[in-house]
Image (cartoon, rainbow, N blue to C red; front, top):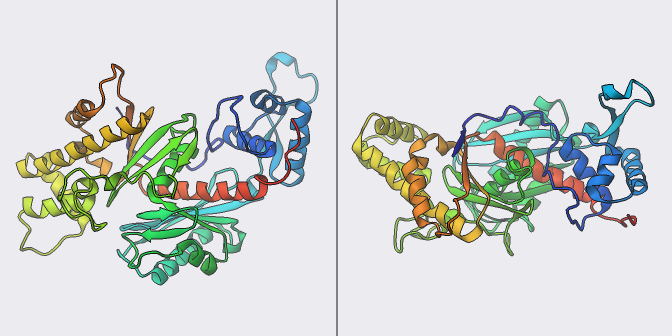
Length: 424
């Protein structure tokens, strides 16, 4: 298992962004959109390379790229000349995304801290901002907080809010991304809210929302280790437990947009109470609030003043490291439940890679070798190795990048995903 516990230094200024799809892959999207997305993913590509990768004629590529350049989506950029050509002929050129064509914002609304990031059309960061969270909010208050945070991020990026083309927002809970509807979220005091429409009306911008764990998977697909990997899963462990699944370079949400709720699979009939209102959910044994519930007893704090969850968990972790048996047992138990959840992911989806992400992955007891060994015991014995597991404790900024990728994808679809496609 590989452990990546710092923010990826390439995240803020990527050389290309988006899925790196294999050449000659079938696609039903318009040719101009395929061309644009390949250029964006590579950072720069020549017309000849585009024609080769898509299996279309150079004339078709020239026609489409001329239109993309004229409309301001792509631009010609100089590339280093091959020393072997002796300096003869026209200077070589490639195509790149024109960064200033559009920009988009991504935001994460959470239990502990809200974050926002502004990206240009090529995926480079222009600015970011954070704001403390106060826990559960009324929808109107959360919308006001989101608007203020977005304005702060825009100010840091040196742009006005109306310069944005779209906003993507990640929210924990049961989210219907297609309808922009929040069925339930632990950060909102009401259920069944048309949250995207309400936010769009307040911001004056197109808004897309999604489950926050889906957006971590989208961030990995656009900016992280998942770029060249067609199938992988992300499991997030923070105040809740979430999962995002990528299949054939696309985020899988389920028929109603409510799939991949790993935190709410049942691991104990009539078990511990989950914050969703049901009992026996995986989340109720390994999420922040589950560990904090056990920590209060283990650290003998039942009759003492309540500590913030983050402080309480840090204390629990320090006690476990110092040899406290009760503290160690809490992490060991949580690790066993995590192993069971991961084994179910493997048995159901057989991903090539599982990424464990979120602030709680700083607690190495959750993914100790005995935890991974227990996971292997629960995985179907096929005679083949279990999927690779990596740990990415990148913090909240990654979630914002996933939300911004959602917004950039929306902008791309609106401008390039419709209209008649010329025959290749």
